[in-house]
Length: 521
Image 1 (spheres, rainbow, N blue to C red):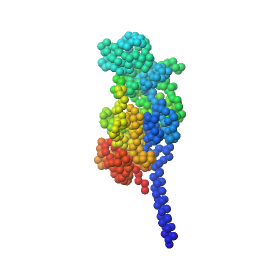
Image 2: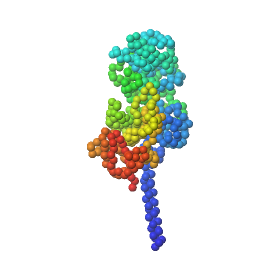
Image 3: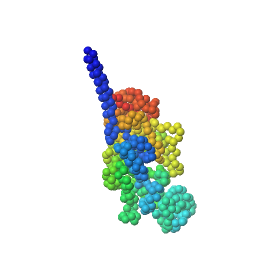
Image 4: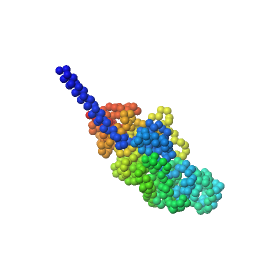
């Protein structure tokens, strides 16, 4: 009898062990092979390469500078063999520091810069002339053609404007600004360059860019054709792919939204555009599309993603949606809610659609900034994260992350566009279930959908193997009844939100989101 009792207890014990084992297996089912997508997916653009390996290896992909430490990248590949490394570059802009490579950059003629409406020299000048006379200094409507601190392009020289005298039609300039001063004849065109990003010049990527023979052994060519010939860089085998920065589908938006852009003179004709820049924008689109296609053809085995380039999704392995969802404080002309409307659009070039389209695999990124201020030339960025007592905007991060999880892309939370990951690597409880492990949500169980609340507002939700994601992009507080019981993350950063409790409904504040964990039975 004693033996039978022990046998019975033994069987019960084995059953309990098997039950817990099966529960453990059920939990482990959401943790995929690291080579597969298991959410949340995380990326970081331009982190400090000198950060520790342990911090950097956590991300699914890194966007890096072309001059970053190649040896460190090789170490990262050993630390996380599934991590991807993309070199970021831009041919839409050239940075002033790039002009140190005089062998290449000094071959660039004035016609390849995207310039503002300009004028011509009314007197010849030599290489030492600092006060130059121009035919026109304002437009017919009295608007300035030149302003103090503009940089000017005149044949193969650049100058910087120190003073403008409208009455005498003269410019006082610094000569040889990054390119050597030289003599110029009367009636040579002189125009202000366009600067969007501090200490850069915008180039003419349109297909109407003039073809010029720059004596490099090639036929007459455009800026885009010249740029393609000088790409890719050294150490090509180290890079899994490339981030092409600033290839927008239009470029006339620069006017009034840049450090220096009052007008655009696509044809270098010194005349005002009369079609609201429609022809130029069409030409810009075709030029950028051609550039990406040629880059794809040149490197068919490399991953190719681009920034602000959803319109070109068919050519790419994804797009970076920078500054999304954006407009946290409603200070921009477009409303925050409209940004989210674009974000959640299932067709067209919105984030959700693009993250599911184009070349596979797709590495689209939704990149949120805590501080959305615009960079300037005046002073270095004053980084709040370096100040005592700094606390991240956890709510804004939750909104960005849950928005990213509505699509099939990656997420990055950064301080500001002027510095990206260099300003600090943030890590949140929602990234790895408060330290329990990355990829805890597993795969999506379908597309996102709208869930109505009692006040007839809609939250965006999406089911995952390991949980349930809710995004409230509206200005209303929502009480949402869940389709089944879920557990909140047990967090350390915002324990008031991430309590670890089992819930059947949740209340979510305006412009906020929540990640809930599936309860395995």
